[in-house]
Length: 109
Image 1 (cartoon, helix red, strand yellow):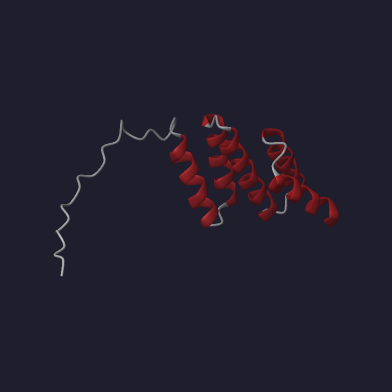
Image 2 (spheres, one colour):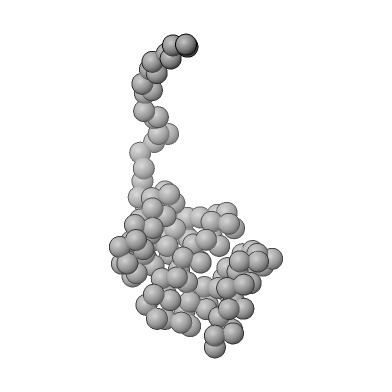
């Protein structure tokens, strides 16, 4: 029978610097997700807009626009939701998820 060695607790990771709410996209992203979870749609929209000001990766922007579309859909702002799908397609035009979402919307209308 092998004896297991006790794990030594690790020191918490040190961040490179303090989290700045104004310039850290991760903070804006987490704020948006929390607001969406609480169904605080207007707050989530503001946080996602702020995230988009800071985000530079096309994949991140695509996901943010998809979440913005979901927020607008929850608020029954259908034209705004469709405009967000256009933005999704603009950032990653060959993404099958975005194309499927757009086709579903067109079939419904």
